[in-house]
Image (cartoon, rainbow, N blue to C red; front, side):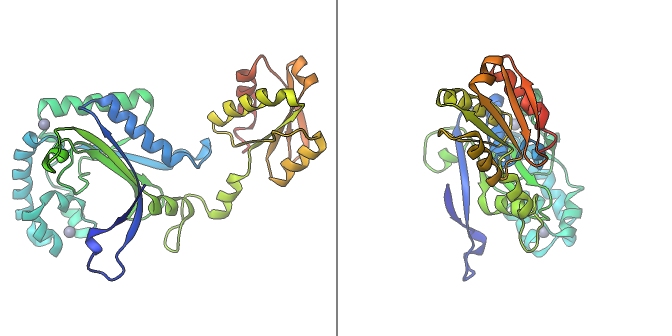
Length: 332
Ligand SMILES: [Zn+2]
Ligand SMILES: [Zn+2]
């Protein structure tokens, strides 16, 4: 996790500091490793949410090709930008010679309009880059990571090659990117280091927080009150008897893996005291397990708000966690 300074704003008195969570992975070109990294980025972002809100981030994917496939692309892009120069903003006019790829990243509406007709890198890929991009998409499809291909995604930095991605949040306006990354296979060498291909991503902590809670300009994915409500336990596991602690812990772990927000008391307390505890924490459900219940392989699931309860029969802990998950998933 690094505190950063925005280079664009160095001249301003109040230079913008922000905090990033960075992940770097040094590895040769490999679609599985890239997919794993993208998966990790998505999982980190989604971690504060329950399983119901997991579709709030969109993954945009592109490839920038290698230096070889970029030669012809840059040529054509430059030609296109020169032809459309009069419609570009002042900054972009300068960018044409300095870093034409950055024009594709401009947030100015008229620039966006021009860029929407620009040549796209994916039509210039060499065989190796093309095959690699196809393999990566196949792996993502296979593991069920949804993505949107955006052939005009560039990330604006010269050192990126091949795979790049951005993760955008719903409802964040123009600055909706909360995480971004890509390959920088030649960067270390260019900086005087070894020839070590790498891929990495950064999550902007502030953008991520705004995407969740909102601020003066943005609503946020969850209004903060609703979000706080989400932090209340979905389920409070009530264990009656010290000898059940290990089992209870195991059950909580299985339920947490399924996305259920679980609480449990590892102290010996009466049923009444534990129910009171569950109430105090505003738990939506409680699951009562005692020696008797364990022998009969049945637990009691209680809807705390409506004060109704039912018996849940089970074969083992995995079975019980699945049954409880199925019963409460649509009500939490
Ligand atoms: Zn290439
Ligand atoms: Zn512009």
